[in-house]
Amino acid sequence: MSQEHRSLIARLRESHSQQRYMFLFGGLLLLLVIAPIFQKSNIYREILAGITSIILLTGIYSVLQESRKLFIAGLFLAALNFATLWREYAVRTITAAMVHYVGLIIFFLFIIIIILRHISKETSINRNVIYGAVTVYLLIAFAWGLLFATVFLVDRQAFVHVVTEPTASFSPVPFWYLSFMTITTMGYNDIAPASDLAKSLAMIEAVVGQLYLVLQVSLLVGLRVSEVSRLRERK
Image (cartoon, rainbow, N blue to C red; front, side, top):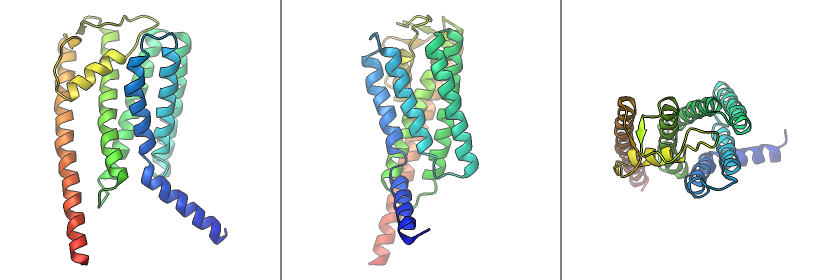
């Protein structure tokens, strides 16, 4: 391999290292903004399937530099989710939706572990750390929303004031709304947990969300203090 090729590969690796979570963050942000707006549109299912596909692809992009085993595991989970996503889109049954939601929850948990593992090894604050920290927070909220939706599909009385019906056109958007209200501890004024299981999951999410913010802020402050100390020592 020539020196030019090695230099190009090194630059590509460096570029990926600096923006590995940026695209995943963008995909999640797109889902957060677009999904509620087009929830009642005739092309809502196509839009949701498209954005979910983008999230799966950017999720794989974020683990490109991990070990071979982790990358293969991520690729397998993504492929499995592509299959369940488009099967759910094609057959439009509650069972297919539940399988798809469970698969996405597992994939999101996998990506969360990868990001936290990477952030914990950083010695300074950079774009990757910031994007990674925010991405984990969004992934927790979206995963919990899918968990709420799955619980609702099993028990129709688990939540009150639900504006969507468990039909072929079922949408998880109301449960993402519920999840973000829970993780940010803003409180409920419409849809809310009613069953014991739903209430327990809501309490756990609220605690997890607040603990994550506290621990992540302390980590970022620690990294910043350490970075400033090193700069002063060099001077």
